[in-house]
Image (cartoon, rainbow, N blue to C red):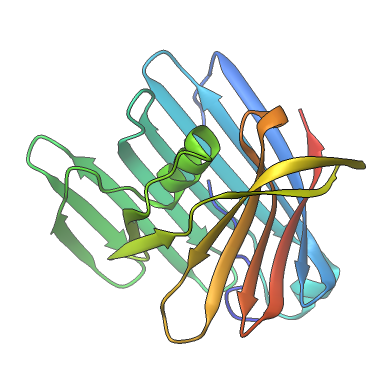
Length: 222
């Protein structure tokens, strides 16, 4: 069950925000409920914060999964990331990025090393990418440069399409977004975003060789 919580994305603690939205997702692994993910997006005048906390249930806890916390803060208008933090308690992994846009460099601290990397003008991290999906779907670019797990990657998206699915007990059309992983494993990340909920994700699945491995399903939105 390596990577069970990797779909969980993430706001820096201790910050009082003017606006906040909370979403709770049931988390499934190969069809078995394995816990929940709570996502919060908060807005200040000049910054936007994103936080996701994945908490295992008893079944996942027995199999060695721990709490995963992911946090990011970005400039509100451009969503250019400023800081990012990811911690996987189950595997003892953590990643922290601190951005210096003046020098176009990012300082990376992980569980086993420190490094710096040059930044492109449009580099995102997983938290900022999640905010882009919420804000911009269906008007997405085909490619995004994303700093993930300490490495710069290209996220490639198919053009979004409308699909009718169940959202909190109601059938309605939502935007379906497909990201092809391109890692040789026939892996796709598919998410559905509801226009009625300001573009928020209502479902996400990770497909491997046409088999659903991980699913997040919206259970509460406020």
